[in-house]
Length: 374
Ligand code: SAH
Ligand code: SF4
Ligand code: F3S
Image (cartoon, rainbow, N blue to C red; front, side, top):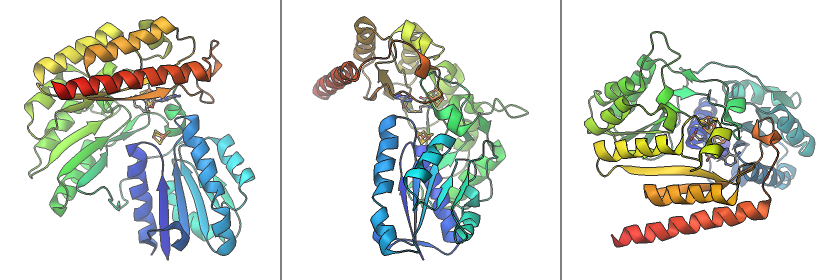
């Protein structure tokens, strides 16, 4: 029996697909190269922007032909998109040939659902769960091993769906993380460990006793072996001096920080609920540059957040010019159901958003070129 997994979204989802692969292999499935050869196809979805959801609808729709050819083919859709009950229902209504729809918290029950599929279509969307410590991962990212250190997010940036589909922050116990790192290194195949969390800087605040992110970093570096350590994503409001010092001090830690700014304008940052100002952000950048020479810094930006004026957008352009990032991702604001920004007046027309994203990307291209000439 063969499986095929299609993954959308962030690294956390990539890693989650490794967990799904682990579950399927423990049930006797093996991977295949083409979806046409599969007995089960799993779509692990993302809900961050509308475009991501549209792609899933398109691609799941295309499976109808395969299902016609092979009546026993099982089609499962899981991930952030299906954690939203309305979207899960819409999927089942639009595509009656989909067998299993799972939320983000009940993926470990996949085996049970596969068995149940023979009796009829299944849907279950749970709204809470625990971090699973027992499952074997089927690691697929070459010599890099992803290690999850926490799930969920407490920040509720007003544009973002993640807290609604991934729940509140929940840190894994430090001893379990260290155990996993030791196991991974002992396997001898991995040269790089990448820690994952939506906001890694707030790691351990929910544990008792609390464990700081910088302590976790130092403790992982103390694990014997030849490997580099990196992590994502950092939220500027929580990136403390001790974390910057630890990155500077520890040879094993990659000199790289992804530090999403989202906007260069203080009014928009406030509306986004980001809890830092442009000035505070620039202060952190200065600190990083002073303490970690040659540190690579990258960022994410959203253009066309509700009510963003031309001048406010230009503050984002000037921030990008000032920081001289190694690279940036630029996104057009996408309205997400249930978020605070969805209800805001002053939504920006698509053509204005497109114009702004193009100008930001053009600036990025220009700066990249100049950097190369340096
Ligand atoms: N936890 C990370 C980011 C997760 S989402 C952080 O806080 O930085 C990855 C990126 O998607 C975000 O940094 C943001 O730039 C973008 N994003 C999130 N929601 C969005 C939305 N509604 N519209 C457009 N871009 C969005
Ligand atoms: Fe979304 Fe903000 Fe949490 Fe990042 S920190 S996942 S952008 S709510
Ligand atoms: Fe997308 Fe979920 Fe990641 S919404 S960006 S896959 S946490």
